[in-house]
Image (tube, rainbow, N blue to C red; front, side, top):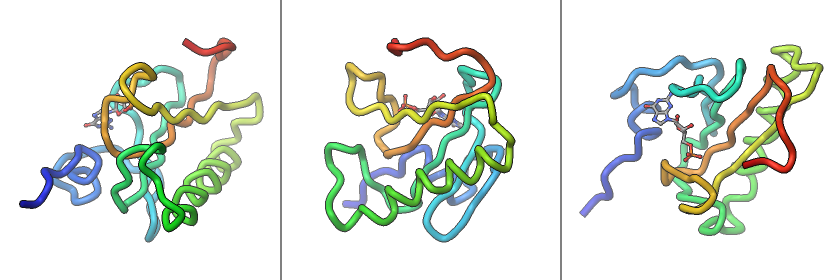
Length: 115
Ligand code: 5GP
């Protein structure tokens, strides 16, 4: 039986609406529905990889691409004061959607260490 689609697969298939800021053959970027900073984007691979701990060597190109796209967006959006990329893996880290994605956060001071 097919696995139910993740919320991000539904967004990619336009079954759920979202604000898209970028899309290419490997990934798309949307605004987070519950932003934690003035800029809070999600960089999402079109291919479903549940989380980093389940990634495989064959996923290296697409996962690397997510970071390159985040860098391009940071330039395009002129996030010159800094930004943070976050990937939550597993319950204790706050993962809520089992579809790997990179958070791009910017626009305020970001505490370190996080959380
Ligand atoms: P995680 O907690 O798994 O690292 O991140 C999931 C993120 O997806 C959360 O920041 C949450 O606000 C966001 N999110 C969950 N559902 C939706 C949705 O339907 N639309 C959008 N744009 N973001 C969502």
